[in-house]
Image (cartoon, rainbow, N blue to C red; front, side, top):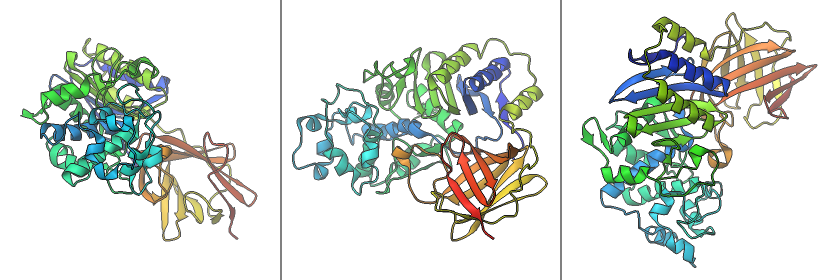
Length: 471
């Protein structure tokens, strides 16, 4: 079981502002997993609401891009590359036979600022290629580089390849050597593509605390813990606006784009990732706010972060530490367990072909939990769902962890870390899953009718797992 939340709130902080931020977020379908506020050089807020923890490393999605920018910053500071360098010169051996005028104009600064001239994200096209660099350079460049903003994770992946070209290391290994240790970041990892280089634009797993440290580095213009790690020149360049993205949507996504950093509509800049991952830097206030969440509306989330920044220091609030702890523990509280209204236990299910690669499954229960045992053809594993409480799980399975499939999905098995609980309702077992290694929260509904079984992810039209009772 996962027992308690992690909370620290400095005495000068308005505690009601913290709980209001979380309450309003949930009302707007922006569930907060963890967040940290650093102000004036010290941590003033740390909250990880149960079942989440600062020890867990979650998929950052596109917030990975701001770390990728930092890797390029080191190469720039070392004099190895310049932002005016042309891609066709860096990768001369990978260029197509005929180099178009627009490709010839593409420079490192365009790759950094999402201004390569492409009219769509290129990552779905190149990510499974044997030679993704050659594939990227062969794509049509519709616009003159520097004239057309297009959010393009394939461009960020090229930054990863630039790091590999000049260092002989993956972006992860390079940053492990130059950044992570110096910021006190441990235990992070970065998914790779078939050519074994880091995904660059996505795929980095880190905690809110790790993200906040990156924010502090840029808040202090490259300085961390008294050491100048990045140059002021680079941090200033990376966080100013290079691209006009005024047609890109809501206010915080139309205020300008830097070198893998967004400009905020109100003040400051940020790195961000799909479903609510934020590293918000407010230089005028000397503040960094790092958030991990599952958000249905990131503009709403940004509005709430701005509101939080405005109200944090307006009095200490009246909540006690015990009240804060109780609030956080109940923030993601599992529903009450209702007993079985269908006999699903003790029956061996022979599964039809499915994306998870599960040929057999079986449910069982004990006093505190319901278990789903499954075979993957090589071993039996077990998922455990608490009765009115979270159970922590770690299994190796394919296609179970939610991802942005076009950008990073794959068919292989992977370890999945999650907290889970369940209840019975309407003749079905409802299984609730809070993923601990990415932002998502999902519900699966399991039904047993006559000798047939089905499991459907809430929101889907068709079951993801079906089968029959194996007599």
